[in-house]
Length: 65
Length: 130
Image (cartoon, rainbow over all chains, first blue to last red; front, side, top):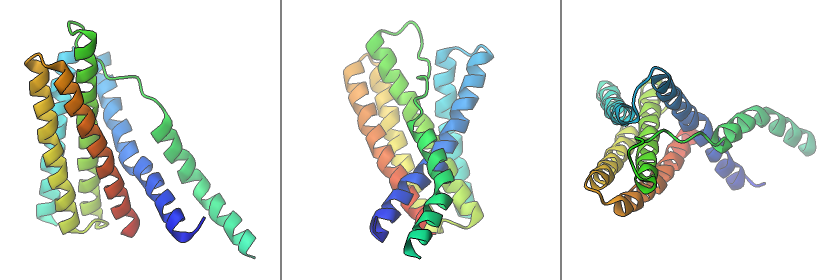
């Protein structure tokens, strides 16, 4: 494997580790909500709300950097 | 010597690669969709929920990168603008589904999902450069 190939391969690993682990954490939260009896409709709303909050938090982090 | 270096490199990479592949290849049980939906509607809703989860993960990775100083501000803003753009498309898919157009909603959600995966790759490339 040459340097470019290795770099590309590492991209895949970084993707899986960083975004993938974040995704796992969010899905775990959703599973917890399901276990607590939230309806699928409530979960759909909660996921959309989580997304908007995460976007706002990221914007705050950028503005504050 | 080169062989030994390669072996050490592979040994060092083995753990993150194993974790990475485990995370990316493990199929998750689909997020539940309301039971009063038809199968097509439930599939579309599942895709929309998954897209929103992926976008949330992207936004969290961007926030962490900026806070840790591993992602330059201008790059972070560029990626976050994409997250916003794709979020708007997911919202369009949700609106289509609510109006009863599940086929269009599913098409839109699938398209957005592939765009989000491209964004994941861009974020990963950024992480590697940092």
